[in-house]
Length: 191
Image 1 (tube, rainbow, N blue to C red):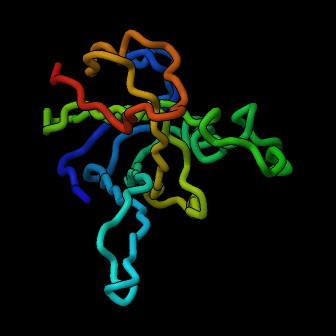
Image 2 (tube, rainbow, N blue to C red):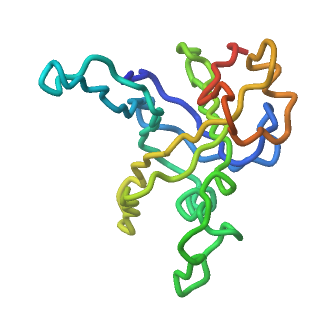
Image 3 (cartoon, rainbow, N blue to C red):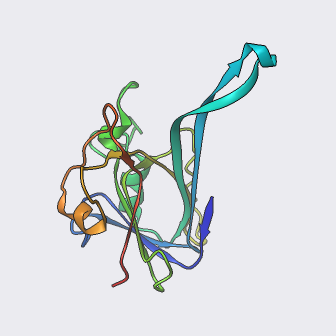
């Protein structure tokens, strides 16, 4: 887990590095919290009383937590209902049926430093509101702050070198299949 200090400005929605067409989320209160862990399966050995002798790494879970302040209401609406095909909710609060694949609905999340703090730009190509995370929108007259947790899904790493500039050239990342190496995030240069 890493805590990134300093305010960041968030964008959500398109693959354009200049964020054209993305929704401007607003400023984070202090920065963001990037967390990751991996699941595993122990390899146990009978002769050692079922003690683990090795561990197989199965996969990563990556999340990003941040608190938006003075956020853009339309952007938050899109982000908090990102599992809905139309990315909007009717007045009844209706959503899509259960059983949809979130990878198809996930969108890029860009976090740009307001103070050239390292990383200056962090891109999560496939981000979506984390399952089982409550969104609390305060309808009071006080400061409009909302805490979010985004689940980061991997993309397949293209063959050869791959960095922020090359990521910017792709419009639609590939879903991981088979033995593909995975990319969860990329750090971009300071402008």
